[in-house]
Image 1 (cartoon, helix red, strand yellow):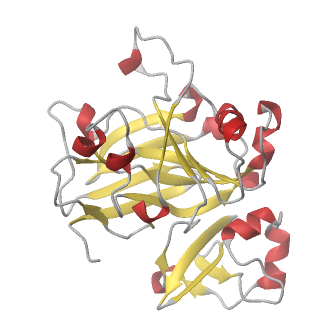
Image 2: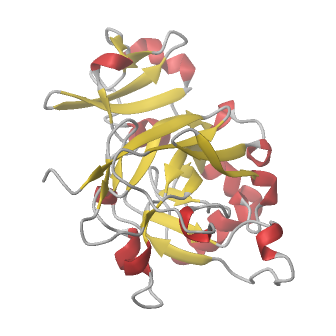
Length: 282
């Protein structure tokens, strides 16, 4: 299933996207789960859609939000791929983790905001894992049972602010600097996450490409590790890391400018596309 959160006017909703790319609203019927996170938490599936279905709405008539508009926790992973750029370097014993806030993320089609305070705005294509079942201190062997689904993720980064100190927080938390979507594909529709591939394009030019079979820390390991110190709840997000090829790793560096289009594509999941704008409208 593809589950999307959206906005029409001042109202928010969510639904399942059918084969005709129409959204079937799910949140209005009696006893309906109130959000995608609640749908996942309740263990609902395709067989439950008819009991909550509203009138289909065209994707063109809505503004897509991040599939989980307000995650309780967003964990991001750095240095998580075996690749030529790491040749000769030992694999880390533990991942470098940092967090993002919900208001740093926009949905598919919505503009990323290049901060006027920086000329080093960068992209990082990733795959996001969305928790569907709560858990604490989850053993690796049980971790995949806690996955609700997968989505594309752009961990937009303001590099100079990221490098102000050894702490990533400022550079990773500029408002509307990253994106998440275009929808969530439920875990039952992804037979083997390790078989997924990730690509990032800027203005149609391929910048990043890798398979998830190249993870240093795979999804069960990450869930087990993070849940050792933090209880995970339905709707929590783990962004699993980016490969080399993002702007600051290129020669010469390539940073984003107003008018650029970034696409994060994961075949079998979808393509997350966002334009870049200069500054803010808030």
